[in-house]
Image 1 (cartoon, helix red, strand yellow):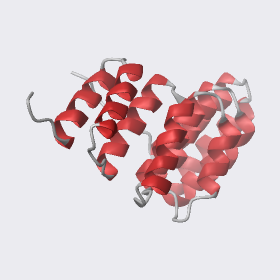
Image 2 (tube, helix red, strand yellow):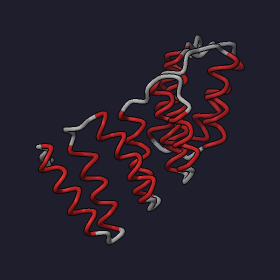
Image 3 (cartoon, one colour):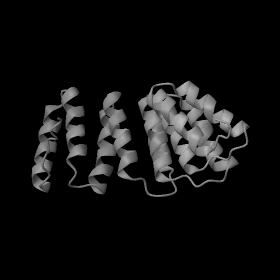
Image 4 (cartoon, rainbow, N blue to C red):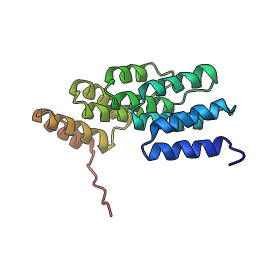
Length: 182
């Protein structure tokens, strides 16, 4: 392309991200900045997602800080959720939890859900309990948090906790819904 803009760069970065080429996504984002284009909050969401998918923790933090300090863009709950997911998937569960706690706005269920998923991935039942309590408050009738926490306890062979969770679901009228995949 003779004239590249923010949209064309972000489209390529997203393409690299989707296809597992996080390092190339980072290089292209840096090239975009070096060519004088000013990234917006959407562009930062694209690159943070690319870092999250590729497990590029240091690059993710670099862009997270750059967004706030260099470009003075407001960090949205979605930007925080992406960083929580990045930290959680890389095994930095306590750092992810601290990031959620430090948010200047109320974290949404996406951030807590990402951390709960990371707790399952890394077998942290204690933190999973804390995180699930937050999700139960935010989405008391959503089956996903209950089912995920139940699965975490099942994998840890804490069957009494599984039973308690199922009882709690019944008490609150939460039903487990199955989605048919075609």
